[in-house]
Amino acid sequence: MHDLVIRNATIVDGTGAPKSSGDVVVDEGKITHVAPTGASPAKARRTIDAKGDLLTPGFVDIHTHYDGQVCWDKHVTPTSWHGVTSIVMGNCGVGFAPVRPGTEDRLVELMESVEDIPGTALHDGIPWGWESFADYLDGIDTPYAVDVGTQVPHVAMRLYVMGERCYDDATPEDMMEMRALTRAALEAGALGFSTSRFYGHVDRAGNLVPGTRASAEEMKTIGSAFEGLDFGTMEFVSDSLNQPEELAWIEHITRTTGCIVTPLMTAGPAPVWELAEKLHAEGHQLRPQVGARPASILMTLDGTINPMRQFPAYREIHGRPLSERRAVLRDPEFRRRVVSEEPILPPNADAVRFLSDHEYQYVMDAELTYEPGPDDTVAAVARARGVHPREVIMDTLADGQPLLALFGRYEGDLEGQRASIEHPQSVFGLSDGGAHCGVLVDASVPTYMLSYFTRDRKRGPCMPLEFVVHKLTQDSASVYGLKDRGVIAPGYKADFNLIDYDGLRLMPPEMVYDLPAGGKRLVQKAQGYRMTIKSGEVTYEGGEATGAMPGRLIRGPQAGPNVAAL
Image (cartoon, rainbow, N blue to C red; front, side, top):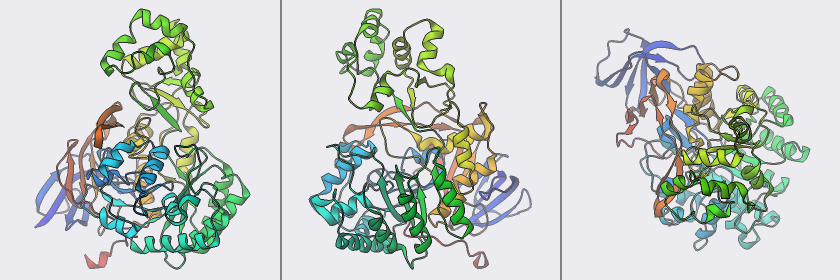
C-alpha cells in the first residue's frame, strides 16, 4: 500500500522533455515510480485522478524576501498560492542575521527602505532572540507549507562587523571577519551570500546601503569563503555590470571558488552574457538572473505610490475610507479642480516621471499581460476619449484598477524579456515575493509565465510549456544546489502542481491589511490550481490551504536522488 498515487496525468516533468501521459507513485515524501497511464496497478492510501490535467513539479522561487514574514506566516503567501513549493530568501544583501543585540531596529529600517516591507509589521512579527546566522536558522526552523532556504546578507554582516563604520571602506581585518562569518553561515546551512551594489537601494537618511561601494578586494575576500565547499551561490544586484572592474571580480570568484554567481539582470548589458558564455564553456557557472515582467510598479489609491497625492484637491480627502475616495474621483467638480491644479511634485526625477509623464503610464489591461502597447498609455487613451489624461487616471483608480508604470528598457513589447529568459545561461527569478508590498506583486510570476507566456501571448511568440516548467523547477533549483527536487522522476521529492491548464489565470491585484500591526500588502490570487502537493502531502486544494505543513528549513545543498536505494 503506497502513500499516494496520481493517475491519468499529463506530465511535464521539469527536465524540458516533451509532455507525456502517466501515473506517479509516492512513498515517504518521494517519488517511487512513474509509469505510462494505466501501466501501474499500485494501490494507495490516497488516489488522485488527474483527469488528463497538467502535472508539474512544484515551482522553485529563488528570489524572495520572506526573511521576516516566515516568523509569522507559515504558508509563505502569496508565493505558495502560485504553485511554489520551495523558496530562497535573503536576497539583495538584506536580512536579519547576524545581528548584535540592540541593533535589530537598524536591520528593520534597512529592510523597510530597500524592500518596501512595513516596518511596523516587522517590529511586531519578528520575535528576535538570535545573534549569529546559525541562531537565526534555528529560530526559523519550523514547519511550513513550503521548503525555506536562505542566504547570509552582506548589509547585516557589515553592520555586525563594522558598526557605525558600516558605510565606510572595510579594513583588511573587517574583510577577514566577514569572510569567517560567511563561511560559518554556509557551514550552518546558508545556501549562499547576497549583496547590493545598486544605487537605488538607500536607507531612510538617503545613504547607499552598507556594502554598495564595497571594493573588489572585499568581494573577493568574502567570495573566498566558498573555497573547498563545493556548493553555494552568490547573488547580487549591481549598477556596474558593464564595467570591466566589476566583471573582473565576478570572473575571479566564479573561477576560483566553485560557487555559482547570479547577478540580477534587466534587458542587458551584453558583457555579462558574453562572460557567462565564456565561463560556461570552461566549466564554470555565471547565471544572470532574469524575471518574467519588465521593471515596473503598480500605482493605486492605497499603495505606496498614489498618482493622486500630487493634487491639493485629493490631499483634502486622502484620509477618507477607500470607497469614499473612489466615489469622489467621479464627482464633476472635484475632477475640474484636479485638471486645473498645479501638481506638487517630489524632487526625485524618476518619481516625477511615474506620476506625471502620461506617455509612460499605462492602464492595466483586463488580461494583466504586463505587455502594453502604444495605444494603452494614459495619454493615448485620453486622446482617444477626448479627455484630459488626469481624467483617465481618475477613472482607472475609481474602478479599482492599478496604473502600470514601466521603466528601464521597455521597448513596447516583451521580446527582450523573452530572449533573456531563453538565454541558455540565464536563470529565472526576480519575483521579490514578500517585498515591495505597496507597489508590486510579482510573487505571481509562475502563474503568469504559464498562463501568458506559454498560452495567451499575442504580441510575440509564446515559449514552449515544457521549457517554461523547466525554468521554474529543475533549472532554478540547480542554481542553489537543490538537486533533490524539480523533476518528476523516481527518487525526487514529491512536490507537484496539478493544474487545469486551460483554466489557469491570474486574479486582479488587491490590497489587504493582514500583516502584523495591520500592515498592508498587495496580493494576487490565481484560478486553475487543482492541487499543490509538498513532499507527498496536499497543501492546497481548489485554491484553499489544507493546513498541512510538510515544508521544512533547507540547510545547505541537497543531493540528487539515489535511485538504487528505492
